[in-house]
Length: 83
Image (tube, rainbow, N blue to C red; front, top):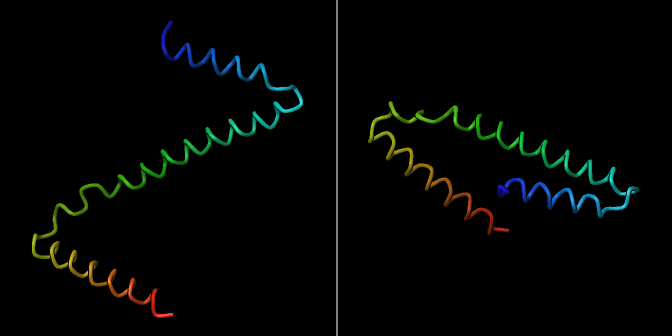
């Protein structure tokens, strides 16, 4: 028996142990979990649209950009502790 089939059987066994009156809640939980998986996939697809965006930037501009980001982070962090 394949590992996937073993897991599927274990899940089925666990579901059968849940009282009938609680199965709607379980269904909603499973559906929510599956929907969240779809959302995560679409989020990563959107992020990957930016892959390669930095290929046409010069090394000098890239380094300048990195330094500016670091400076902004330091300023932002120092402001958090001024209260």
